[in-house]
Image (spheres, rainbow, N blue to C red):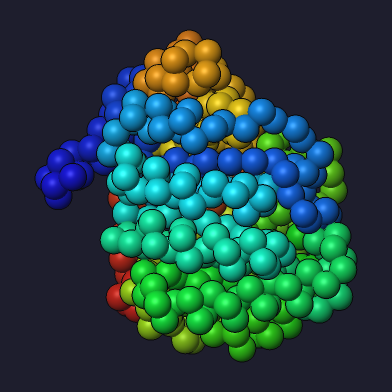
Length: 366
């Protein structure tokens, strides 16, 4: 996509939101390729769900209906590495969707499977940025307790070291460490962050534990208070500002995250959308069984792609999709979902200007 076409497309989203109908396909797509997971996390019960997973040929038909409209693809689970065909899914994403970035959040537990599949994934993703975010929620046995698996910390740190070696062959890999701030670790977060810095990832990021329909956590007491989150993430912000990533993509992620953390603090404090949300316009989510959602927090189906000949556009323009968008416009929900927030920030001129200032290490804007 040329620069002018890209700018015109970005400008179309606010107009389509105002008119309450989508004028373009999403920029940001999340694919949950399985609910199967080897973790038993205190902050997630997705492993309890069952689905008839989309096959490779089905993904190919869906991607053909999308074309090269997607800029950022996140491939999530469950544990994506429970699928032996994960490298082929990545290949289809690269060839059919042609994004600039593929993001792969990982729990790092299936060590043998990761070492078998990840070189293929890196090979198939050449020419774009492959972000590998390893989930580490605490240190040693405390991480094991949160993740519900003895030895989880040892496995994920072994995987981290393996990815560092793999980066020598595939420099397009960006290695991140991702920590979920929950009521189980919020008070210890500064200590956790300082210890994780010793691994020298390209980026060190966090999210807040959320009540999501997709994760089965709507009734779970997992989130920190607004004050607990602010105290935890302020330590991370100060660390980022004190020592910025030398990796250009890592630095970009940090710059977005600095703005994202402020956005989350405001959302948790005010319990409302601080800026317009573009879930259902610029961001979308495909569940393992083909249900199309505007976001995974509400996980309200626009329709199943299998029932519509794998035609993304047909489901994207359905009445159920329109009802979801009206609800978002009316601010009937508010959440700090990172994948949607990135896009929302990119479509907010004031917030985007702050991201640019973050990247250039200019004084932070009010």
